[in-house]
Amino acid sequence: FESIDVELPEGSLLGLYTDGLIEGPEKDVEQGMVRLGRAVSREGLPLDELCAAVVKELLPVPQPDDIALLLARTHALSPDRSVSWDVPVDPAAVGAIRNKVARRLEVWGLDELTMTTELIVSELVTNAIRYASGPVRLRLLLQSVLTCEVSDASSTTPRLRHARTTD
Image (cartoon, rainbow, N blue to C red; front, side, top):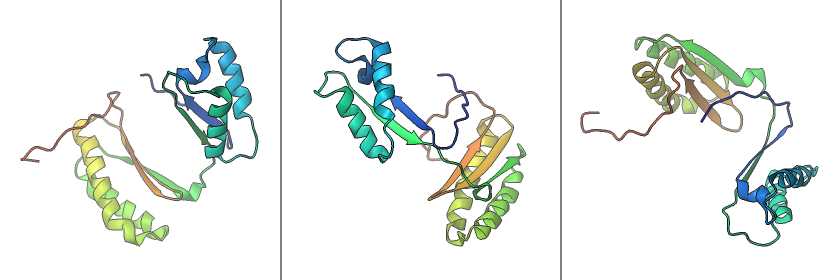
């Protein structure tokens, strides 16, 4: 799959769905897309209710095809709730990054998460340095939860590896 970046305005509705939702009994995809567009344009419903209403409207009777619909609404993140750092591709840089993370968590009043977050950051950054290609970037986002993201220049998809007895 190809990865792309798309900028969406605040308050945009993003919908991900399987083909069974729009094909319907007539198998006209274009008509199904028009029906989906109308169905999601309702204002004022919470996303879970909107999702259920859309599926019910488009598919009033059960279908033999698997059907999935995921709706999300975009919102802006306050600049003081996000921080990112470029990480040198050097294992010695991990300690300095942990210190930056600890200081940021203190600013955000999340001292109780410091040890766990430092451990997670150490593992993710070390893996990126060890197994991927630079540049490496760490980003922390604070909304209702703390999110820790590590990115690198590698185009390969991460894969699950099971620990060996020597790990």
